[in-house]
Length: 172
Image (cartoon, rainbow, N blue to C red; front, side, top):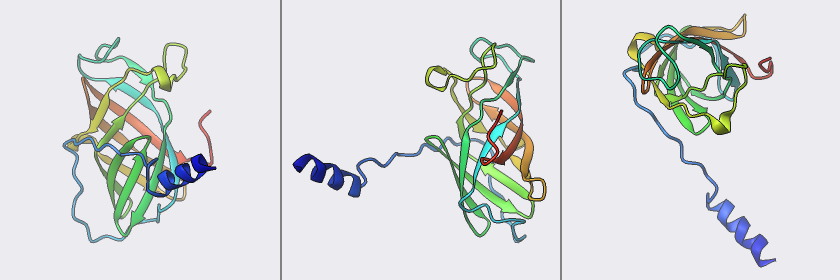
């Protein structure tokens, strides 16, 4: 019974709370007066799309190689125009101005292997920061998507033609 009480106290004091990483890039959030086109608060989305290697430095990949991204869940919390996004153990900041979602931060971008499988526990990718030349998504509430090209930099640079969809439609 003492163990049960100890576990309860540890959980109640935040002993199991996960620390979120923020990976700075050159992408920045603009000032904006335009009302957000939608409210993303409390929603969960997943990403997918082709990743193109742009520079040397990616493990087992060369410039012009293309891979399919592995889907990750993105949990959104919105307060006015400002958005906090949790992707695994990463925190990405966002600002929704009209239908344009600006991103600042980064995450661990994983891609599928040669057989199209995603092995998250074995993935040896690195943290990728979002760059200013590709940090904006277009939000289309009627279509239920967010799309854009994200320019990411880690040990190499990649272009990511990403589509986000609500998580209620799991990736195939």
